[in-house]
Image (tube, rainbow over all chains, first blue to last red; front, side, top):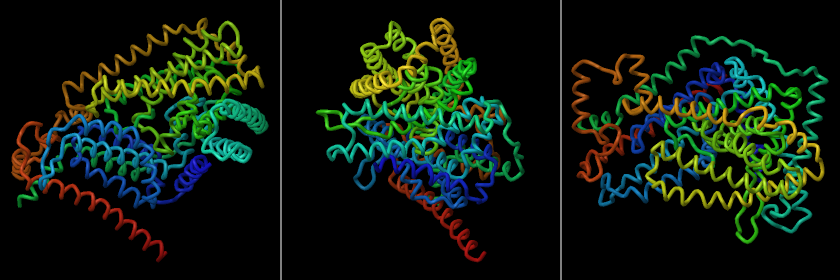
Length: 267
Length: 338
């Protein structure tokens, strides 16, 4: 089933990328997490026609992807996952906001169209910020940071285990799906009347595996406790990175880029 | 039903973050009290991976030509209990957000609330457990599953509508939005409810101990009054939403508010003739005064400035792309010489 195989591939590709050793990879996870969050909050704080004011924010993904040697095309494909609902809201704006914003060579562009473009652009920026974070930071570093800020051990361990076993169970589901397809008639998905026993079977396999996992963990001395992740120094380099991202965001949030462009156009 | 970052405002995102964080903290505390807590965590981890895998498998809905997949909230709550299911769904949503761009980082609070808190902490104890309370059999499991999944999806979809409209990113009228969202999610709910019921009945038949242990272990009604949970959530929502709305009304956004707190002023004041000239130019020529286009109904701005704006925007994008390209070239050049 291509859907499942793609998902497994997705996880492993990002994990491989995160294992890199570029200047961005070496930054403290807290610096990258806070910067990504601050960037997203700044981007979504613009109003819904601010497409021009948002353009300088492309520098963030462009520069970070180049510095971290992350392939853009691969990341761009994932942007489509976030699209359906945004397109729905954006197209609704095109229908409901028909008043003209400006006309260009006889072509009138409505406010709705501008808000659709802004929404898509905003989606692109936010998706890229998250993907760059995960493509440059190993999951264990992120969960280590969560432990350092005292997120309960139960939740962090649960997250780590879900992440680790997602690939395993996706493969299990793919095996079952292949077996079903080979026995059944050629069809796209599983018939709804078979889905209950299919999912039920997967549940039982998962629970059996969970029992074995728990037994194996116990054999190796597992005990759920609040342990503190290895301290990692927040160096001057991390500080400079975070300060640069923060000031970049604040600067372009305050200074209207279209005014600068128009001023330049007048000269 | 996953909401993206671009669909919400910082105020709505933070308010729902606070509510979901409170719900996750509550569930964590609840699990910790369980004597089998240590054993439950690996089971929950694998159950999370199961939900993930389950959501990837599409089933064909007869006579419609369309397909659906399981959502997992009620199914998981039926297997491992409400609070544990909320933690698992939250972990799954975080992975979907980080690795698959499915739902945003700022929108995570909204997504956990719509798809986790509603089915696991409200619908499961209030509907599912009440219906199956008199005895676990195929009839009660089927009725409970369908009713709970439909109710959970309806309330969740309504949450999406409210959160999107409160964020002000769409012009879609409330009635039209509701008329689009609710019937679609009703149909999805029926199909998903039937599959959830069939899966739970299968497990009940093959391993009755799984469902029975869940059904007996978490008697929510007696140990934790649901009114208390509701009360805390209402207080958290009203407080966060109210506080943020207060700042949002007096200041255009939270960022400017924080600027005001940090710098003593909402706008960075720059002095000097160059800045004054720039400000004057901005006032007379701004393509989008105060970050928006000229008001609707007014004369459209001069074509010259419009073209300049668009060309400038495209140039900025090219410049950003070019910077990235140059850095990549320099880095790959270095790699070759090394």
